[in-house]
Length: 627
Image: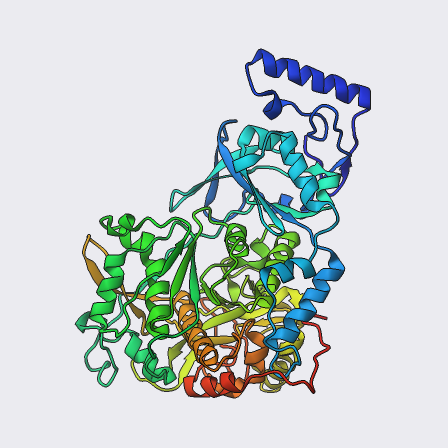
C-alpha cells in the first residue's frame, strides 16, 4: 500500500527482505517472466541492494489525482502497457538562487552582464544537481531492468519508458487508463498516491507524467458577422471570406509593423500539444489568400507531425486549428525568420521542456499556447520544477511567451461560490512573458483597444511579485484602489506576480482569419483567443532579435526586464475588464494592469528600444527576481 501524506514506510528487516526477494524470484521464474523486471524488495531494489524507507514526493497530490475536469477513470492498465515518465532531478538550492541572479543580470538592459547569455554547458555547470542525483535515479531504474534505449538522460531530467506493471512496483501505486470525455484521449496515470525510496525522493522534484492530466480544449472558432457597413475601411488582404476579421494587414496597421526584410538572421518556434498537427496545403492556402511576400512554412519539425489528419472531413480543422493558427500568424508577422515546430503528443509540459533542454542550438523565441489554473497543478513541486527549466532557457538567451488564457480572471475552474479568481500557470510564472488579449474599442475600427472580456490575467496565488515588476504592480494597486476599480480584496492575492505582461488582439469581436480544412479543402475561418495573441507578440520579438543580430547585438532573451523598463514602447489599453462570465474582473487603466499588461506592441517604439538596449559597465544589478 502507498504511504499517506509525506510519511515514511520503514525498511523491512534484512532477513525478511532477502526472503521476499527470493520468493519473488521463484514466482517470476515459475511464470516465465523476466527476473530483472519483476523482482523487487521493499524499496524496489534487486538482490544485494536495499533501499531505505519510502516517502511521498508530492504529498499534496492526493486531492488532485484523477479529478481533472472532463477526465474519467477507465480500466486498470495492463502490466504490458507502457508509460513514459520523467524524473525531474533536484538542483542544489544555492545554485538555483545564483542562476536566478544570473538570469536577471543577463536579461536587464543597463546591467554590466546584459546580453552575456550562457551556453547549454555553462548553464549545467552553474546549476549542478544535488550530489548523486543522476546516478541514484539511473541506478534505481537499472535495478528494475529499465536501461538502454528505454532511458533518455538530459542535463537534469531522466525520461524513461517503463512497462506499467514495473512502474506500479517501483512507485507503489496503481495505474489506470484515464479517458477525456470530449476528445477521447487515453492517458495512463496513477489512481492513488505514489511513493519512492527516500534516497530517490531527496534527489528529485517529482515523477512527471504520472499524475498530471492536461486541460484539453479546442480553439475558439467564431462565426463572426462580416457586415459590409461595419467593415468599411477595415483592411483585409485575405479575400472576401476574411471581411471583418483580423488579418496580417490588420496587424500591420494596428501595430505599425514595417514590412519584413529578407535574410533575417535569427530563429523562433511554436509549441504544439493536444495532438495538434499542421499541413503544408493549409499553410500554402493562407500564404496565397493573404498575398504574403514570405511563404508560411515550417523550417524544422521537432517531434511527430501528422499532417494528413488536417484533411479529415469535419474533424480536421479541430485537430489542426491551434497549430495552424500559431504557425500562420507568427510567420505572417515575422516574415522569413526560420520557424521550428516543437510537438509533444504526450500532452506534457515536461516532455516539451526536455525537448528544448536536449537542443544545443535553441530557437531564440518560443510561443506557447498552453496552460491550466495554478490550483489545478498537481503540486508546488511541479511548478518549481518547470520554473527551473524556464530559468535555464532565459539564461541561454531564449524568450518564452505563454498565452494568458481565455477564461478571464476565473480561469478554467470557473466562477466558484467563494468568488476567488483562479490564476493561470505557466502564464503567472515570473520567468515567462504572459500575453493577454484585446479587442478593438470599436468593432472593425483600427485604433484604441480594450481588454478582451475573456482574456486571462490577475495575480499568482503562489509566486510573489518579482523585482522587475514590483513598481508597476504597486502603482496599479494604488491607482486602481484610489479610483475604486479594484475587485474584492478576498478574490485575489495582491502580493502575487501580476500578469499578463503585454497583450495583442485576440478577442472574438474581430476574430483572426485562419486557413484550415473543413471538408478536405482549405477554407478561411474565424478563430479567437490569446492563442492568437501569443504568436503575434512572439513574431514581433523575433523581428526585434533579427534587427539586433544585424547590428551584432545578442538576442533579447528573457523579455520581462526589457518590457518593464520600456513601458512607453507599447500602446496603453485603458478600457475593458476581464471578468468573462463572472461578476468581477480587473479593469484596464493607464499604465500596467492585470487585464492587458502594458498594452499592445508599438513596433517603431519597440524597435528603437531594442536597438538601444545594451550593457553598461557602470551599472550592476544586485536584485533577485523574487524576494
